Image (cartoon, rainbow, N blue to C red; front, side):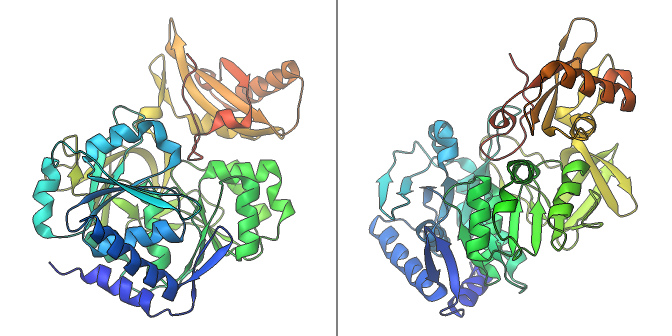
Length: 453
């Protein structure tokens, strides 16, 4: 089978010559050097008899070597399974779900190893996919609502959205490569002839320093990480004037944080993105940089709202789950589980249906309460969740992180008073706890709303 989209992108990359392609570990790699390295990796992989249909796990983080590995696997029509240190405890389970046959480990030093794994059998979904002779990509759901699911994507289908040439960006590769959003950023960076800036760590100071040194123009990130940049004051220490676009996704943005981002970066376009591992990243257009209202859809995507829930149909749908039934209906539509409010062509995300808190039969979403808590001048972050209640079933609780140390008694009185003034009674937190910043987010810099046991 022809790989039209992949061939187009790779030819475009080969035509960039001496232009910078990757900056990692303080070293700049040109497109010529990257393309040569892809050929080196194709030979290395061939030595291990890795080829069309091979299921290959790649462990590491973005740098010139891992990037070359992914493109080499793509050209060989193999199936890549990106893995990172943040999911180390889950890796044995992921390898079993994917039935990976090889494991490539790439160290930050550039050293690498390739181990042959004893897979029991090829998953039935992959058996049905192999006759297409397309490369594949396997990512996993977070497992926050149950056992993680392995998701198989058709690599050629994923790359089709990048065939139309667009301007390139100097992009911080912030989103981890073991989730679809991270790989989407990676592919888009090189498809458009941009520069991949690879952070050694994902702390506010490290990322801001890389923006300054690498003259980054695009930062794809999460609302939680933007809040950390603000709260830490890292934005004051570095020259971030090269930035032209900040995109945020993977979780809800509250209006308080968005307002602060706009104040700190007045000359930067701020854009909301949306996607799911099952359907890819949907084209989106924020109403304005100051607004959480967004238009989603466009070429290759159809959307509809049923009973307040967003449904999407995509030309880039996954091939399927490796270890679960298909979530699509007979016409190819997927219920995202996201509850939205609609205004003309735009929607505002209210929250995941699974995160709704039912207090005595009345439903609320955490974001509404978090917005009120974040309006306090000393609250840096807030996470709202449900706790068991003997009469109501669930009650509202919150964790807050402070900008400055403050005596808790007057703080909690003030926060509860603010909530009582601005929220209906059932939405007012019964319990508010002050915690450290690191207790508020996951290693993917997404807000944690888990209930304390």
